[in-house]
Image (cartoon, rainbow over all chains, first blue to last red; front, side, top):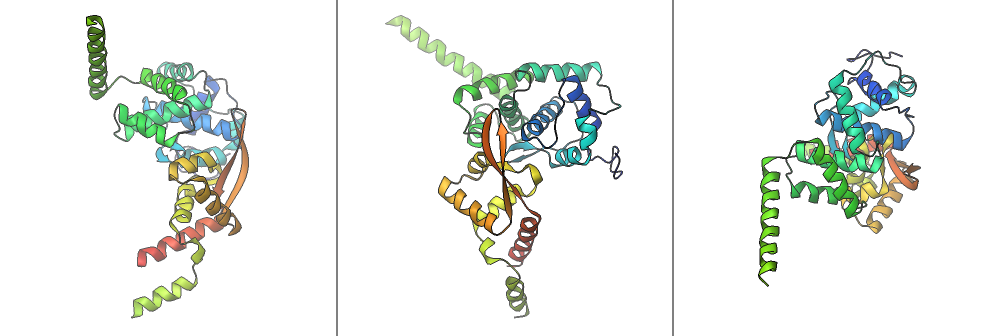
Length: 187
Length: 102
């Protein structure tokens, strides 16, 4: 249902690609369902960070990374979204990115997606590096356990290559561990 | 003197109960989230407010008709989320415009 011609059949971003993703993932989201919208928001955020451009600008809100344009498009095209109507077919590269995100997030578990997307957004878009990004993530999402955050961050890191600072931090950590091991052997 | 008269005149049109840092922060944080709103726990963490401060100000904003709450379900957990109303957006914009004049 086309209501206004903004960019892509009444959409601000490329909703046809978002719907194609949901189709690929075997999801049939309900636009009024909080959890379904969260899954769409965080999946699209991660995919955009990985280079699958769907033209949705994400910013940091109290909910973590969020696109109000995406929400507006979902509501304006509720029927298309809920019935997975799209003429777009993801190409092989896009399909592999979708599978990557689905596998890393325990098949789109909402809390895992939320942790992964928030960490990735902080690291890639907000110039937080390594431990700083984790500290900020814990401030924004203090209601998730340390264990869950550790798993989410590690899954997010699998999706993106480590930065130079992260590699330096890892080397420093290994060095500390090595020194501790050598000291243990002395006694 | 003309400017202060204008400020006073515009102040009469404002809801002075809204001019408080926690209330303005809550409305500003919900402004772009539309009907999705934010869960209580997200507001608490994102705005760095304790329960007493957040609850009392959310209650006041609900009474003013600027915020509405609804029950949501996330991974089998029931929680409350809050979203801004059209009146809330209007009041926030008026407050923002008035504060800019000061």
